[in-house]
Length: 298
Image (tube, rainbow, N blue to C red):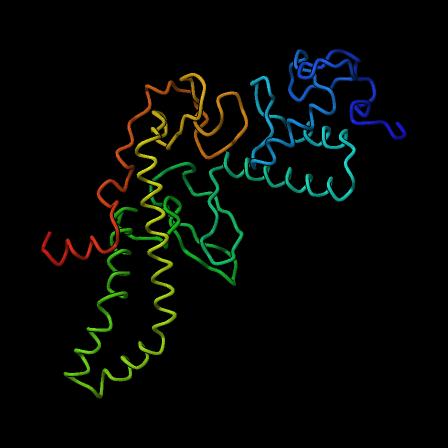
């Protein structure tokens, strides 16, 4: 094709018709299976580029479904971008389609620091605790598939959250007074422990602040879900209605794209089950509230 522009760079054999988006006459290549939704090269790429900028799988602008990776790559090639830009967008395409594939399979990322491994739980898309163990020798994290916290045996995610918050409060406010009282009773035995605690206090404070920050972020997120989301009546996964009519699909936009974890079944918004702060209904307070409740015998 020589130095043809993007409107002229569509695959050989495509017909010259009116673009369904900009209405210019140009060789067309549909992003979807519908022949009525043919777009010129420039509009094809603009549609894909817009979705990639939001980290989403491209979808047909006429709401008929997600764009296949093959068609998205065709649009990228037709755009005739400089090599460096093409490489960047090709990498983004790989990333969003891999994310969509993981979402469809119900995969969960390992919680190990810096670990990028993903695992599919025995029952995908379930909000019940399931044990996952990272197979990387350098990691080996064992965690819950539902709340992505260290795996908790014989307890719900909410109960594990309560215990974690209580432990953070103990480390933050009660460990030092406990060790000081122990030293007064048996200095020879407890003085080394108090000295070690004082030496490590900076690192402990950082870890405590990090834990409290994660807890408060989870609390805010669950309260927001309570106000704005419902549960799918088929699998009970949390669903948010962004816009449009009341017909939804669990795990994606109703007309395709934006693939996330979910069962993929359609339902009407009014049929969704209300969110009573999800499984953390009784646990949406700060860590200090737990200690105060327990200290008062509540």
